[in-house]
Image 1 (cartoon, rainbow, N blue to C red):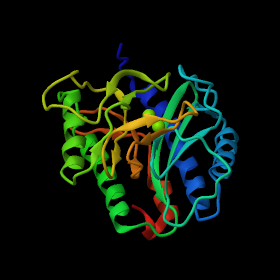
Image 2: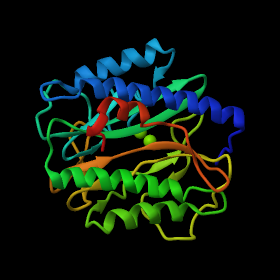
Image 3: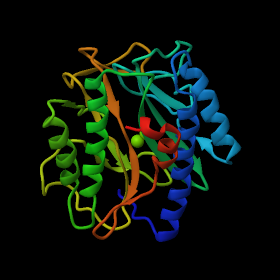
Amino acid sequence: MIFLKTEDEIELLRQSNLLVGKTLAEVAKLIKPGVTTKQLDKVAEEFIRDNGAVPTFKGFPNPYGGPFPASICTSVNDQVVHGIPNDIPLEDGDIVSVDCGTFMNGFCGDSCYTFCVGEVKPEILQLLKTTKEALYKGIESAVHGKRLGDIGYAVQTHSEAQGYGVVREFVGHGIGKEMHEDPAVPNFGRRGTGTLLKKGMCIAIEPMITLGNRSIYLDNDSWTVKTRDHQVAAHYEHTIAIGLGKADILSSFEFVEQVLGDKAI
Ligand code: MG
Ligand code: MG
């Protein structure tokens, strides 16, 4: 069931999502060769709790194994999503997708940004740029009167035009009091098909795009999703509210990009 949000509820969602954006900026300050993803997680969790919120990911249940043990997902290189922070130092040339979720004043925030560690290869930088562009193409289609398939179509065509793979098994989602609400928001689709988009629907759009083939598998840790060909994958995510003529982006990359400066994707 899709819950349409009131203006007041959308403002609460915005507050939670702005905190996600600020948390990602705290993480951005630390990303460099030698830092571990566990160090990033510690800073993120403290920042979220210091701001009166709870990290939604921590303890999130998993039908295939134990609950998620950390406050952010850190997916490095061939890890697509749901990477678990660990003690392995990031290396020059790596990429790391940091996905963050908060619960504040009864509403969820959810946003992800893929960062470069030091200098990355141009072909990887291009993947990151295209994935972020694909996210914004999807957001452009997320308006009252269009359909869910229009969002997926926009993301898919922009990504596949560059020869990249679009992951099918993991998708965006409705968001509100729960992190995952209806509808599922695929990153692929056909124009003019699927659920009618209405003002007040709040969704997370999150393209997961692969440099090589889109085939993925679940690692033995029951969380980490990796590409089968071990080529890198990128992941950007915004939480938005569907509006008349234009979506209202509730999360923000502004704080991250202030930290990254001219290194922003
Ligand atoms: Mg997320
Ligand atoms: Mg999400």
